[in-house]
Image (cartoon, rainbow, N blue to C red; front, side, top):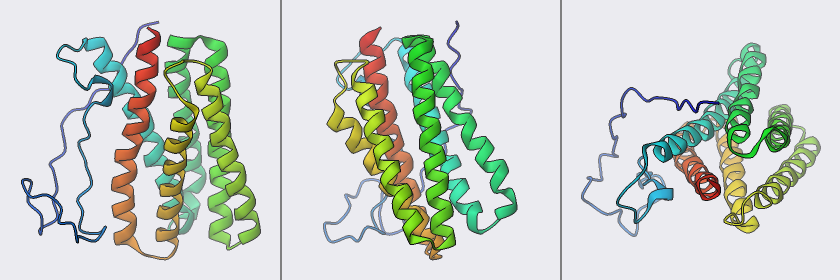
Length: 226
């Protein structure tokens, strides 16, 4: 099977808050709203390396693309749950396609059996996530609490699964990364549901950056096994 990375046509322009310049550090007294998120995190798997194989760069790009897709379509599901409920089914179907990209990736490096197990875990993640958002939108606190507990349980299962595949990966690191990812999604959902759109945009920027941290950590393990 040939590995075909996703291509990026252009790098978006850096947008800075007017009170901060590229050369100015964020003031220690700055509020979270004033701090500019890191839109260009370094390639974590390649720190302190002078020579990088092109194939390895492709691996990192593909993994970053997949995790960004998770963020983008999860956010779209949250937004449409209130703004355009008639579009929710189509967005849900599109979100469900994202794990197939992970399946192809895992199948290439770990085999079909591992890929199918990972696909099932991510599918469960999306199903529980949608149930949680639906409960929050409906104002059903009891159902939301049950789904939230199940969602974090799913993260524990994913973390335990990943550490069995590579001795470079650690359970606590995986769970911490996934836990922060979920918290940002929930914070963003609450901001949308309460019409705090400026706050949601800040969270979304940070969530994109954090998703690339997850992707880079995953890429490190995959390249370690090559």
